[in-house]
Length: 232
Image (cartoon, rainbow, N blue to C red; front, side, top):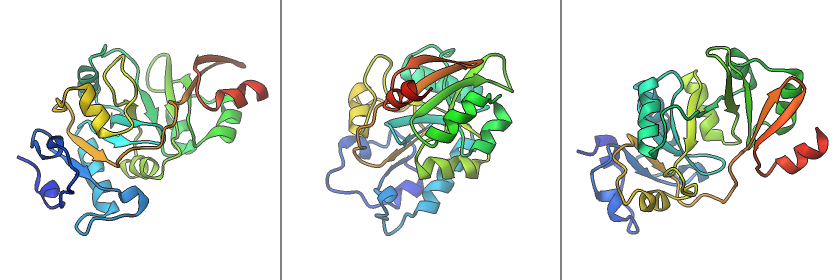
């Protein structure tokens, strides 16, 4: 049964059957990021709900500065496996760590002088850096999104979150919940929470760079790579 928190939200005329299916525990449809508040629900309520769910090791689907993303608290192995199962990919496929500040980054990663320069120039924004991890062996992808809700969410949680694009493996990134639903043929039960902010502006996925010493290795090209390749 849909949580009382969701039942208090008025439904809009254009909601699809997905929104009324009761198959998803939490589903919110509201343009609160543009300041258009529902008469019952406000920014702080949404934020608290997301923080509470992440602390319970749930998987949430939320808008980002690129596309819709799937997120969980960074130290939950079960939630990471849930994301992999939902996306139909290997549980060993790495996720990106989202931080709320550069200060949080330094708690979890080794940051070279080259990485610090890139962070100064391109964060917050669509740049993921593969850096040596302080809490596990090897490298970890990390970024600070240019997205006030995500930054506030992670700051309130006081821990990083792991995130990945919300899409079926091998399919394109989803810029609306309808796109996501179509990819999975309406079967979104693997998610504990969906925050629908309508159709997002099209922004390419982040540039991914691995930093080894004073060398940059391009893993995935994105919008900021042209500038970085000329300057570094």
